Image 1 (cartoon, rainbow, N blue to C red):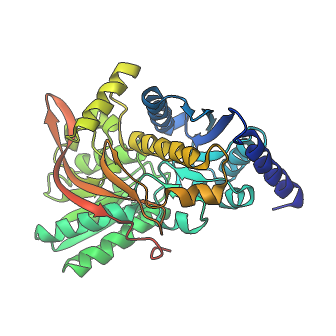
Image 2 (image 1 turned 90 degrees about the vertical axis):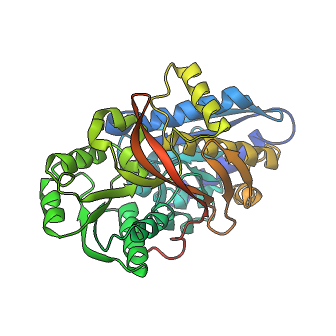
Image 3 (image 1 turned 135 degrees about the vertical axis):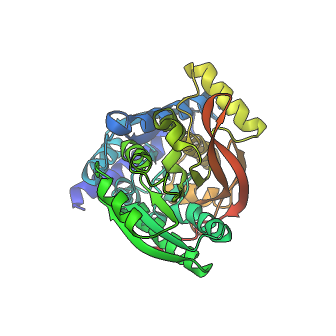
Amino acid sequence: MTRTLRNALLGAAFGLALAAGPAGAATIKVGVVAPFSGPFGVVGKSFKEAIELYQAEHGKTVGNDTVEFVYKDLDQANPAQSKALSQELIVKERVSVLAGYFFTPDALAVAPLIDEANIPCVIFNAATSAITEKSPRYVRTSFTLWQNTVPLAEYMAKQGIKKAISAVSDYGPGIDGEAAFKATFEKHGGTVVDTIRMPLKSADFAPFMQRIKDSGAEAVYAFLPAGPATLAFAKAFNDTGLRAAGIKFFGPGDLTQEPDLPALGDAALGITTTFNYSRAHDSAMNKAFVAKHKEMFGSYDTVTFTSVGAYDGTHVIYQMIKNAGGRIDGAKAVESVKGMSWESPRGPLTIDPDSRHVTQTIYLRTVEKVDGKLENVEKEAFPKQPDYGYKLAK
């Protein structure tokens, strides 16, 4: 980092401390970097709606200070652009907190910035375990692939599945998922007959389906980031006859995120996943969350795991501001929420003091029709799941 940039970042941070000081009311800005357009635009939409919902419930002030969210569009994975947008938010917009980040490379790119400017970064999604090791100023309110995959692999082994194959997108979270699945499944007596890594921008999945078919596996563990590729993979699994051949389909819940279920149609029926949230989660708080979403935005069709990641992330940001009395110091803000526990629409959450990632319940779900609508229906709950990959997955 150049001296000029370092001075600009430190100057921005100093300006933030003055602007958000205890002497009178101030506006505290939070910068959100996410895809608000392009193929992943539904993610940014879900982030923004969740933030607006939280503010509708809890107000736009913390103490005497007004909380304002500033949004920057990053339409696809692009670490250089993520860093540039984040730097713009720090230097020009003088944000006190960074948040959002859908893809892992985009989250990793800002580690030097948050350390130099000493501001916290609350990750709403990016799910590689190692991210929070790169800076002590990261806090994550989503999930990791290790966290979701360990209970799934244990479940598969308990169902008597002996041979499985993994097929994952070839980037951080996918590699985490592959490692977690292989280690756990084989620990419980299963055999991973092959591991497939697919380019992140894959569009044609037929060759991978043939490889799955030829492997002799009874089941496939698959991970792709939620969006068009995930939809195409699930459709290809059905269209190429793997489902008809009796191969069972498992994976983290990105595979069956709620906005994609209508497009998947009946091809989604029976897909079993583990995840931290289902729109169909049976709790009073979740029912109120979904109902409020429909009241504010006319529909709850976009409510999914990224919604609760942003909703709970906003809750953490508000708590940081409250704890700081409006004067945001990144290291102290993160320290103040370590061990924080609260009830979320997805269930109970606690920020692990070491990993700064949420310990939470992971649910086993199967896609079924509920009142004529496809939903992820929860079958089992695995409470207090940590990030098994922290300081393990490299």
